[in-house]
Length: 189
Image 1: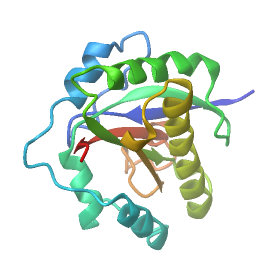
Image 2 (image 1 turned 120 degrees about the vertical axis):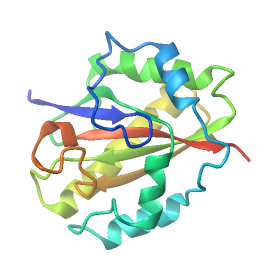
Image 3 (image 1 turned 90 degrees about the vertical axis):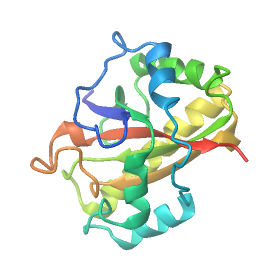
């Protein structure tokens, strides 16, 4: 079975290029301190508009779009999640990492916040396929957090970006571009 490394990106703002944290290096305090750094003037993000823009810009990129650009101003972190090749099935070894994320989201310091899960892919398939796969992988993380780990589904949103927002634009086929971001969208209303 071929396993593709998919990364859950949860880094601060524009600092998406630092190393990927493996499950062995990741702990709840890292997740909480990174995702808990919320600016009082954080921009509002319309998730439905993000989905619409991603679907309308397949093969054209989304990073320069105003609504997608807002995401880089929000708290994020990078961790590794493995999926089966060309699949939405989360590898069993990655459930520990998803569990660490869930534990942090249950902590009182983060319990008041909502989070966006953004799926990404490398440019190794068609742009349309990559967009669909990235949405399904973001949905798989959303489902695992809300069902297996009992994070309230009202706090979780997901969107796929496909290959449209690479972490390594110079190498669009790179495995580094296959990731899922967890982004703090601010307080629940």
